[in-house]
Image (tube, rainbow, N blue to C red):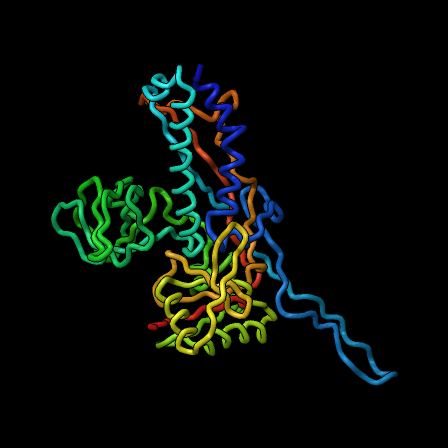
Length: 386
């Protein structure tokens, strides 16, 4: 007979390994190339010592002259808090009881919930890779003066039907809390939620529920202008990646110039290129215009990619239109306290009753963040129009 105890055991012994493998290797092609490690994790923080520049203890001279002065490596300390990543499933007591004598029915129910959790988690992880850590999905495009459950946004790239969001003012005040997205009109950039809002301004932003300021330190932060990993960019020029606004058509020359620049300046070797869908089309058109073959390659995780001189070129839905990233994936690491785990209650149970409701929940958790050891070894093209 199926009961909560057998379901609890199944989540621990069967589903956890599958879920961890899926999220670590199939969530996103860029995430698949990022090494995961528990090193440099101290308590709730990541504290990492990195080198920059070169060792200065070298020189040349005559056979009886002075030896080179010792001048060791340049060191800097990165410091950031581990981010708390969560994913929850929910099963009603009625559904559990209805399937007590039907193992197949209960397994189907549990499979459906886990598939939903995996899909949402993959989406969220892929999105955060390109975010700036603030959790901002988009901003309001037009102020709302009368109560309504529909509004327009600047971009729908980071939004999905079913997502639970907050609308947050510039001062941090929440104008909508845990509102669920019912519908999205991509053409008009209109979003409909399950609650009414008013007094919303164009300076207000949308985040995933309770995620404001708590997301992974993604490429948006690395290519941003603010402090990075606790260091000031103004005092550390090596924290600044290379960026070039082409303001026009994508060319092979512009791509190669980025690759050559990071190699010349930092000794970095680009091994992964990712771009928006419109830029991928521009790349394919460029190959066709120059009568060049379109080469394909298969990456770890089964992802299919185009090839530029042996470097994979992938498109990603979360990259802004007209942008392309040229990265050295070896410079990135996900530092984690542990891999994905179920949040356990008293007695080690992972399935718990939701207070005040006839439902049971289980929560997946991971404490981690992403660090780029060599920001100056990364590059970005913007302003691509065709």
